[in-house]
Image (tube, rainbow, N blue to C red; front, side, top):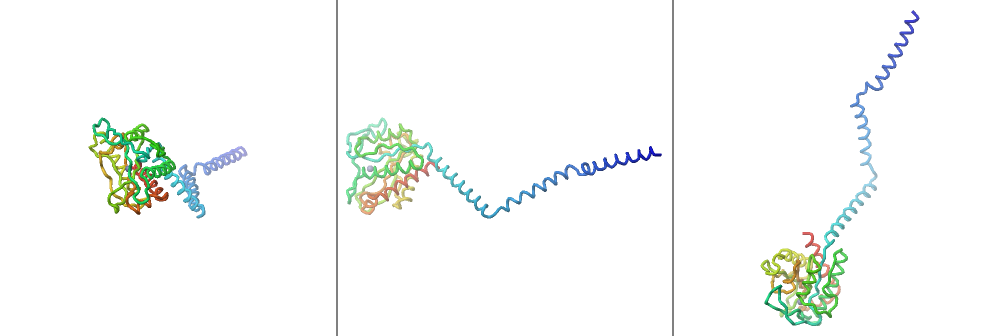
Length: 288
Ligand SMILES: [Zn+2]
């Protein structure tokens, strides 16, 4: 009987051990274990939204900083790798020798005429064009553009076709020619831009781009300076446009025959606004 008692006790111990093992492991299904783990991790999540307000504001600030950095990068991307050729119209001494108005044309015009002159202050167009062009160069370079200047002094002799050739050889993405207007009527004022027509025999294929460039630059100048926005003039009579193999525009920044406009054009402040407006127009053109 003693043997049986020992066997019974040994069996009981084995049963208890097995039962204990079952209770601690097998009785909890695997699915339930995962559920427990999930509940624990879900409890961790809400803590994130309970961060102090100051920290949330900090996050919003850094998010907006990241956004403005992104906008800045996009802005730079607009100007990156873009080459602008700036032609300050005219020069100190006109060159009235003639050249073809377009490649292979039998029609000829003066290589570069004298331009207009301030009716009231005597401000010369070639000097004004250069002053604005130098400000434009600075503005564009500060925005990340690469700038090629046709001229940086008045004492040059570069014909209109040669000016276009400089833009072509630079593979400019835009050729901007800075000029000022004159009129017999002293009441006329405001800015205009010029480009070729769609039927231009030399570069009609560039019409759409040049037209868009002209619209963008005119809008930019009018918005920045507050001057009267006149119009985009389409013409195939401009040697410097006809020889151009890149999108081009002439910006007539205002009338030197209008007393009030001439006075404004004679100030650094207004010239800076014009330059900024042209640059805004170029930004706009490349964002299209
Ligand atoms: Zn001119």
